[in-house]
Image: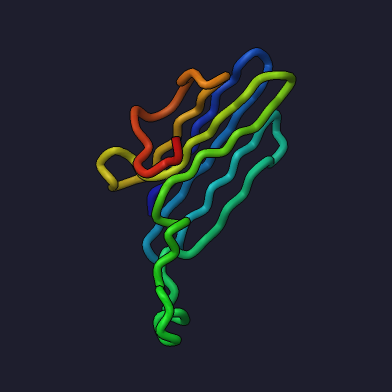
Length: 112
């Protein structure tokens, strides 16, 4: 399992992001702003049940990255979550008012 936490503050706004991924355990992404959970996603990477019913067993949402916007006191916070540049772990980027502020150099497959 790959799991990482990012914590940062900006002008009194506390941001915490947890990103975890496991091929058998799926993915779990959580974003906290000022101690309040504002985003949670949990999903399986692969479903044997779907495979047995001849449906696509892969969950693209658990494989590819995403971007989420939050607004706090007139400040736009964008969180990008996904795989790291090597594709071997988790990654996160935090943008404040559309400018890179903190996190990894690259998040694979995150929406732009």
